[in-house]
Length: 121
Image (cartoon, rainbow, N blue to C red; front, side, top):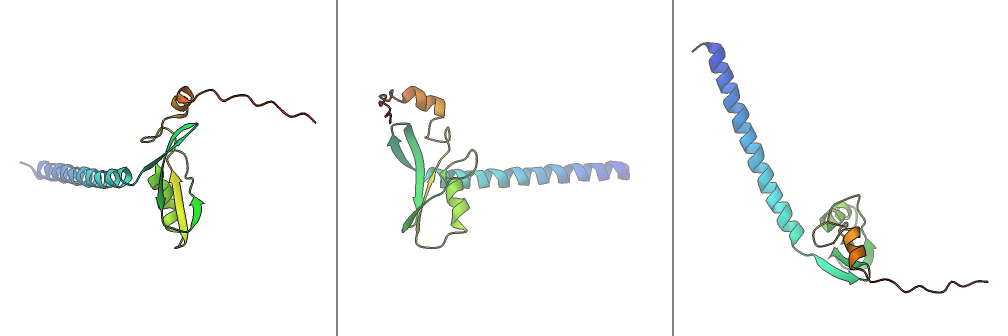
């Protein structure tokens, strides 16, 4: 074998080994994240449908609304770094995440709300 072939073979083995380590690390992290996200969820049944949320801490209630998409774990993680003790963090999941249905599903589940007469002055 020429030295170029040996060099290319060694590079290929290094790339495959590195890719395998990255995939293994990713799967381990994903498993830990899923386990953390699946524990501690609460469900609030509202007239608009169920809302999944989590609470952390005690004290003054603080509603943590995170960006688009994601579960309550993101809301807890976003606030945990910035808020000290003395707060009860409440973080809902976004629609369609985990146990919370999407808005269209909620609309199908919701009963029609009675119309209230408007007040005229």
